[in-house]
Amino acid sequence: MSSFSPFSKEELLPQTEMLEIKKRKGSLFIGLPKETHLGEKRVCLTPDAVAAFTVHGHRIVVETGAGDGANYSDKQYSDAGAKISYNTEEAFKCSIILKVAPPTEDEIEYINPQAILISSLQLKTQNKHYFESLAKKRITAIAFDYIKDEEGTYPIVKSLSEIAGTASVLIAGELMSGVNKGNGLLFGNIGGVPPTSVVILGAGTVGEFAARTAIGLGARVKVFDNSISKLRRLQQCLNTPIYTSTVQPKSLAKALMRCDVAIGAIRGENRSPIIATEPMIESMKEGAVIVDVSIDRGGCFETSNITTHKTPTFIKHGVVHYCVPNIPARYARTASVSISNIFTPYLLNIAEEGGFENTARFDKSLRNGLYFYHGVLTNRTVADWFDLPFRDINLLIS
Image (tube, rainbow, N blue to C red; front, side, top):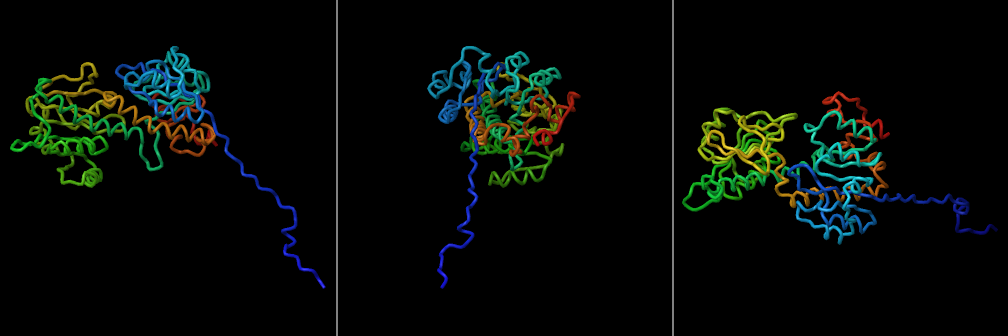
C-alpha cells in the first residue's frame, strides 16, 4: 500500500533562490554659483528645494549671495543644510553645477574634468572657443532649455514663457501709467470707460498667458497667428469669445492703429519673423506701448532694438518700445521657484536611478537636453552652427 505525500516531486527538489537586485542610489554633490551675467537674478534652487536634497543625504554648496537677486539669504540656504562658500571656485568644483546663464569661459576653467553642467545654452551668445573649452574639460553639459518631456513640451521654456506672457501685460500697464509719463490709461473694465485695446502677435504659450492676463484685467484682445490650430487651441484654453485672425497686413495694420498695447510673442526657428512693419508702427497712437517678448530672437516689430533692465524703453514714432530679453529675470523669485520646481524632482530621480549615467540610458528627455557627453559634442544644431564634429548621443550611451 503506497503512502500519500502532500508534496510533489518538483516541490521537494532544491529551488533556485531569486534575489531582488536593489538599485544603488547615487549621492549628488551640487554647486550653486552666483550668477554674474548682467541682469540675471534668478537661482536654480530655492532653499526649500535645497532642504529636499539635504534631507536625502545629498550635498549642496551655495556661493554666498547666489540667492540675493531672488531675495533668498545665505542664512535660508544654510538653515536648509547647504554649505555657504565664500570662494567662487568651490561652487564650481562640485560634480554637478547648476546655473541659469551658461558659465563664462573663465568660469569653465574652475570646473573639474568630467563634471556635469546644467544651464541654459543661449546658442547665439556663444562662440566656437566656448564649446572647445567644454570639450577640453570632458564636461557633460545639459541645456535645460532643450530638455523635452514625453509629451513633446519643453517644461522649463514653457514655464518661463508663462511668466513672460503674464509679465508683458503687467509691464505694459506700468508703462501706460501717467507716473511713467505714459498715456494715463488703466487696464480694467471700468463702467462708462472704453476698455483698453490689446493686440497680441503669436498664439503660443506667451501669447496665451498674455491674452489670459489682459482679458482678466478687462481689456479687449485681438490675437494674430498664422497657425489656425494654435488659434483654435487658444480659443479653447481661454474658454471665452476672442478675436483671432491669421496675419493679414490690412487687418493687422488696422488693429495696430487702434490698439493701446501691442505684444510680440512670435518665435521663429532661428529668428522671429518681422510681422509688424515700420509703416504699421508709424500709424499707431501717440503713447501706445509695444512689448516685444520675442526680442531675444530678433523681435517681430521692425522698429524693435534690444534694451536692458536698466534702460528698458525707447520711443520711436511716438510709440513706447519695451524690448528687454529675458523678461522672467525681472520677476526673479517667481522664476526661481518655477525653475526649482522642475529641477528638484528631476535631479532626485537621477539620484534614485543610481546616477546620471544610468538615467541617461533610459530617460529620453534628458538626452534631448544633452549637448556635450564627456566632452563629445552631441547636438547637431551646435555642430552645424560652429562647424564642429558631432556624434549621436544614442550611439554613445549604448
